[in-house]
Image 1 (cartoon, rainbow, N blue to C red):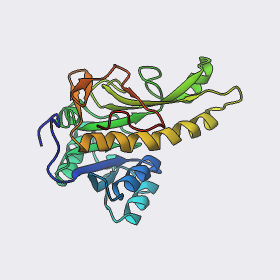
Image 2: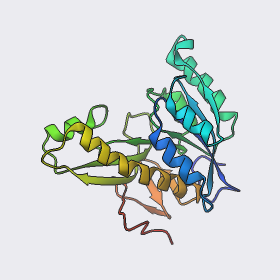
Image 3: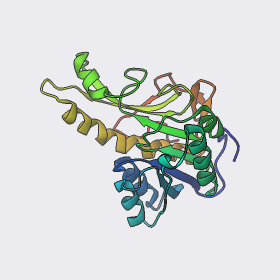
Length: 231
């Protein structure tokens, strides 16, 4: 498969998912991959933490798992090189970060350019980095949300693919807001994976192209009415 997924993949799209924790977004992807009409399959789940509950989720779904601890390597570059070797053994078309709590080296990001996705709990470009729910509350925002994006060397700065929003309520705490945002995460991450598997999605420079058309820089805005660009 070439770098930018310019057409439908041959057979089911092969995906490797990287995790560090509980793996709720991983579960959403596993559930979607198990559907009869799914056009992608999860080949493996790799974690840098042996106690990540997401590994149990993967094993319960019959998906191969692997633990590669960053603590076993002297620096970030050597860990990322070992991670590349582990991932590439599965010959993936797409690599998905689902709560993988590592800052990736430029070499890793370049290796998977155009086929590396991440999800971030804010309406990017707002609130790159950590503590996004508290920051939205502190700013008095009326809406908050989540963004799926391609990964580039800029942290949380790659081209946006799809966003979903939730209203910020007067009595919200970071925890209640996070819970509502997470519901949307579980909807849009599998959708982005499907678009990629269908050959409809690609990174075009610093923009995202869907169905041959450039999306707004904020990406496609998700609606529970469904996928309005499914044709």
